[in-house]
Image (cartoon, rainbow, N blue to C red; front, top):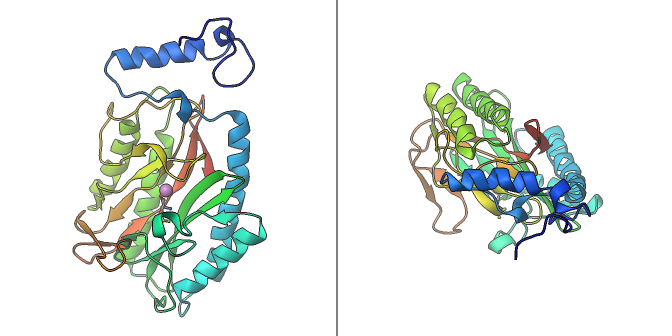
Length: 289
Ligand code: MF3
Ligand code: CO
């Protein structure tokens, strides 16, 4: 059913459609007519939803801050899980990974050649020279946040340090490329070009995602596509920038025992940072990092 110009806008603002999102919809429709993939209304967050998601993100970032304070050589990754669980609970949230599609822990801890979805364990002891991604996700009152950071343990080789730094640069360059009325592929190209220029590869099979009202929403966000490809970005969309950058081959495999932990095929290190971002009228706002 088509919305009349004097009807209340679909966004819930209470304003008339013609004074609210009519022009916005027409602009999206023009891109759709040119054959582009365009977002659906349910991908547009309202200001009220954004405010709730930010409260969730405050817990998520507090968890990563707490991990950053404590992480050191000799610590096992179950201790990281404990910090995330305790911090989240104390602040009134729920760790989103816990029991998510059978994931057994509250956070993902991926060490060295682990690409993502590392399962915290008493048996995984961090040692001098390790690089570790801690990927934290929080639910607060049904609103989701998701971000991850890399941590370097003790004396890390120049090679691995550079991988961690370049991967961060990839995210920052990708973030700067997020502008409404351009495409996810524009952001993706900036990311994979920077990784490749530095001799690295970007994982193709696993990417980012819409987030906020669910843990993983549409769209799927890849970092190997190119300018003009993938979905149009419009204000109010929220998604993650989380490329997995490998020092060697982009090929990966999943542990057959637990069906979660992903490793590089060649055993070389992999790094990842993750920002949760909101597309704004001007560009992007970081919601969780
Ligand atoms: N936090 C991851 C992401 O960035 C998802 C992990 S799924 C889990 O999308 F079950 F392993 F937590
Ligand atoms: Co994510």
